Structure formats: C-alpha cells, structure tokens
Length: 265
Image (cartoon, rainbow, N blue to C red; front, side, top):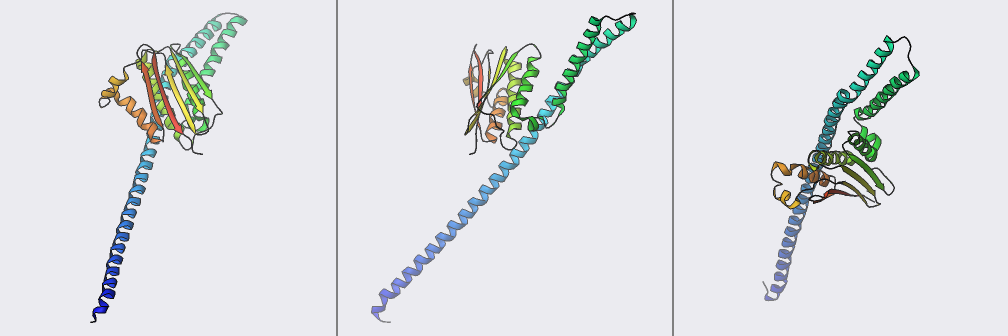
C-alpha cells in the first residue's frame, strides 16, 4: 500500500467513525425523545383519569350533601308547614262558617309549602350545576344558607358571565360548597359574600366572610394532619382543573379565599 494513500484511508476511517458516532447519537436522541413522548402521554392519561375520578367524586359529594339537605328540609320545614295547614283545616272543619281571613291564612301556608317544594325540586336534579350553570347554582346554595336566618349572604358578578368549559363548574361548585361548610362550622361569621369576576383571560371566584379568622401560618405547619385536610383538598381540586387557590385570613376580621382559573382564548 502506498504511503500516499494513508491520508485518504485515515480520512475514510475518520468519516466512518464520525458517521457511526452521529448515527449512535441520533438513535439515542430518537429513543430518549420517544421515551419522553410516551412518558408525557402516560402522564396526560393519568391526569385525565384523575380528573374524571375527581368529577365523579365531586358529583357524589354534591348528591350526598343535597340529599342530606332535602332530608332536613322535609322534616324541619315542609313537614311543619303541612302540619300547620292540616291543623288550620281541622279548625275550619269544626266551625260552622270560615272567615275569609282564616281561608287566606291557610292559602298562605299552602303557597309557602309549594314554594319550598319547588326550591327543593331544583336540588333533586342531579344535573343542576350542568343545566343551570355555576352562578345560579351558587345563588341557590347561598339562598339555602340565608333561609336559616343565621347568616346574611350575597353574590356579586363582575363582567359578562360565561360558562366554563367541560365539567370544571362541577368541581368549582363542590370546592365552594366545601369552603362554605367550613365557614358555617368554624368561622362564627354573620356575613358571607361570593364574588364571580368574569374576564376574557381569567375567571376569579372569591368567598369572603367576617368571621373570627385564623392563624394561616400555624395552619400551614399543620397541613399534614387532619386539621389541614380541608384546605389541601380545596387547593388540590382547584389545581386539578388548571387553577390556583389563594387564602387570606386575619384573626378577628375574617377569611377570604380566591380561586383563579385561566380561560383559553
């Protein structure tokens, strides 16, 4: 072999080595890229499954709370109204004549009973949130709380209302239910205000009370215990639908929880 051929052979060998290294790099890159794609797809599938499970869990919890509310209303409210109406009718039956005032009084009781039944019929609808929307569902929930005569409630809307995509309204409604339940149990509040702010790129829902408040820093340190489970659950559900949860609380002043959800353009 001629010495003059060495540079050519060396060049060929170098090019071959470079091609092998490049081919190996491309192969490894494609393999890792494909693996990463599969991981992303699996993560999306897991997130979707978790989302669907959360939707189902929220629906079951809404249904359970609604049935508990209906049971109490039937026993404590409508049952009493019907008992009063029956008693008044029995009195009228024993009398020879009934005055217009007495008849009007019975009619008023029956009208109130019918009104209560209509309100309960909305709660019986399992698709109430889906059919009527988040704003009306929350209005109905606050009206139920106000009817106890223990709290003053208010709902405020800012901007042009719109529906949220998918089943996010169901999750948000359940989150607000949980916030309201915590407020009724622990805050000793007298006034509860819910604000819905509709912006083109963001939806913001705020629940505010004038209760006794709490030490937020102390609660954060106890989040791994049962005492922090409610707040963690609220934050987890909000994040699951792509939102975030912010909490402010001042002792002796009250608590404000703000839920923010980006809106796809």
